[in-house]
Image 1: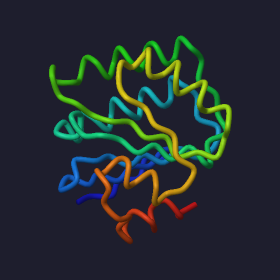
Image 2: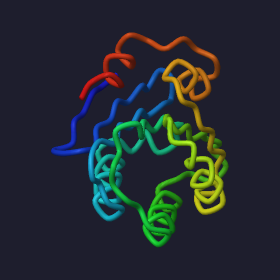
Image 3: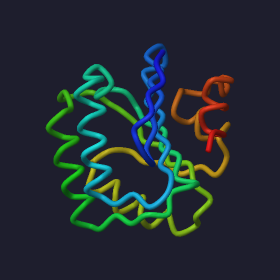
Length: 142
């Protein structure tokens, strides 16, 4: 298990035992910055490409365009191994996120679920497991 902090606004926690990446997006990130950081993340953690992801968007105030999503989806597909099933879970209290998730599901060609509470989000991402303290502390960090 390793914790890595990007310089600003995007952090991650890799839970290899659970085959899960936990991403925390904070502040005014834009699509090109997110893509650069994801590319960097996967170059340092190539095994994590096949892991499911829990994406904490509760402190995200930036913007992502349709074109940004298409470009990130193409980048993600270039990293992935064919036939590997993974889930993407969005942790957000934004009710409009359901529309974004439907669009992202089509673009990223992956299953996306939305949850408002960390416990529910982690259980969905980690096949029903209870939220570990290290993940709780990570999600609660500023």
